[in-house]
Length: 384
Ligand SMILES: Cc1cc2nc3c(=O)[nH]c(=O)nc-3n(C[C@H](O)[C@H](O)[C@H](O)COP(=O)(O)OP(=O)(O)OC[C@H]3O[C@@H](n4cnc5c(N)ncnc54)[C@H](O)[C@@H]3O)c2cc1C
Image 1 (tube, rainbow, N blue to C red):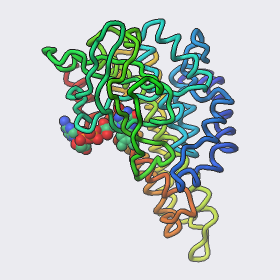
Image 2 (cartoon, helix red, strand yellow):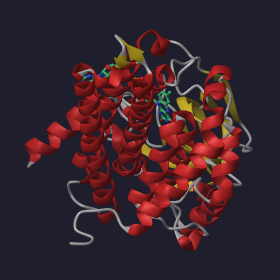
Image 3 (cartoon, rainbow, N blue to C red):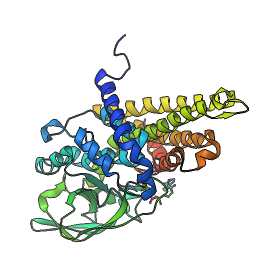
Image 4 (spheres, helix red, strand yellow):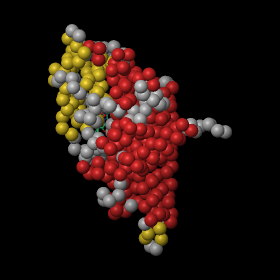
């Protein structure tokens, strides 16, 4: 039966188009981007030229209005060749999702068209050094002053900081709120706002092409209308955002794992030991089978979670955490096995699998560590 539990023709066509672009324009630079720890400008330009930089932006804001599954497919296919580059569409979605969920028409019109066109990009600033998993304990403050908000504080670990134009910043507006979570608001901050600066790049294990920096807000003044949603709703918006974007981290993990499996399949057919292809050893075949099986399962969970977020399914939060956790855990397993299948060669920079193994690790950490995801899932299960 056509259409029963399968992706649409449009989704498959999108995958084909992104894969072709990724192989031609992004893959050739991936090793150098990692080695030189530089922003993947070739990927940025290619994605913007083809309209794959932020497919999720709705048509009324000059975007393509692609659904959540389509956004995952774009991220997955880019991650298959370069995880750092996949953070361009992923973080554009993460940075703008709070605006899509809670922003005023004015903020939407201000930010979204420039993201859709590729002229600008967006980052998401929730974490602080002392407020990682425990987001509600953040200390960055925003004070209302006439027609403006004045922000002070330091946000940490901000992906694509320095490259992005817009920053969705969560800050405390009511330090006396009975529940800390209800005293936090969200704001759209522009890179040229007075008092906004970006710190040095973190020196990281992987995703080296994606800058991660602190951002400093020192008497940073923004117009009052740039608040996203009502005062006190910022953390709620930030966490609802993650229900929509954890599937995209799952997609990134699936893409990295698929890239590692594809590289492994090519290698085992070529490499000979004991007078035969290593692909002919059953021990190797069983490893390949497990890698393929895990990726297949993760991919289904990721698309299901993306569709649930799009529908506003009441289980979307649970499924999003499940997808992010499962996909990132298997990405770590699959990439580690890929290095194993390459033997000594896998441990060198002559092949892409060591980079993929390093890149996979972050998917278990950001947008909430996998321990925090398990807390979210258990809470949802126990609540019933
Ligand atoms: C490369 C990179 C990019 C990032 N990008 C962004 C970004 O763009 N925007 C942004 O806002 N943030 C970003 N982050 C921050 C990221 O989301 C946090 O690092 C993450 O949420 C964990 O917070 P933490 O680092 O403070 O770790 P901690 O919260 O200190 O956790 C340390 C360990 O303790 C465990 N732990 C903590 N609490 C519990 C608990 N209750 N139960 C069980 N275990 C627990 C954690 O799972 C972890 O293993 C990024 C981080 C990195 C490394």
